[in-house]
Length: 281
Image (cartoon, rainbow, N blue to C red; front, top):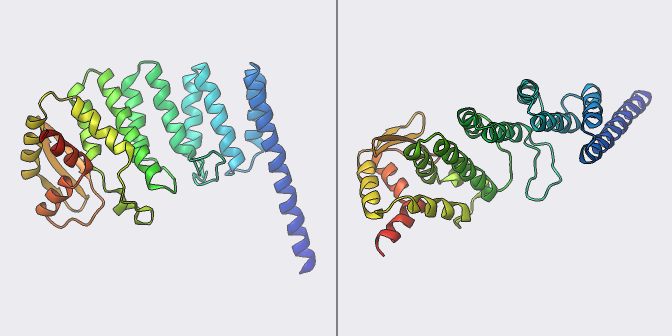
């Protein structure tokens, strides 16, 4: 038994040593890339891709570096190829990260947003928007902070807003901000992170929305009518309201039993209260 344990210890020690050497190679590739020797950097990363344990932090970081390389080279075929390697892998998005304020690697989320940015820069706004939608609804964002999570959700709403504006869909663009402003109760989604204070991001969201309307009293009146006529899809946990002939599907996370609960829920949002104060000035 002791001999078996000794063999296992030696095997694991060797694996750890190999991974450490590969991590050093990643850094070497980064240095080469920064020196303008991109092809040499890519060669190193491709070699690591073949050798690194799949899945492992080394493997995930390497795929991310290769994806970045192809994005910079605007090689769409390889961009999509490496994106799907990341998305379809067994990588753990909760691999620890050393960056301050970013506790986890979030391979899939960052890869998805890189593609959104790539298509945005190339003025392919529809494709960019599709990747933002994926990041918002299909890809998990791992964190340990409610403030960080709220920032991410609000940031995604602003991404949608910009893409839709670029597509000339101004009313739909602002609807994405309003929709997100009503999806405020993340404390119910993640009770262990609960905090009572409003985030600066929610404040920015409310300010931006209000800045887009000349008549805030008219806006509030229309929202009140929408709330009065809302419908509840309890099974999907979605509240539906209509405003300016646009239908809003608002996800909620609290336990809402009926239309009255939904009405109170929406009116307790930071945005609705902010709008109320602004109309009373």
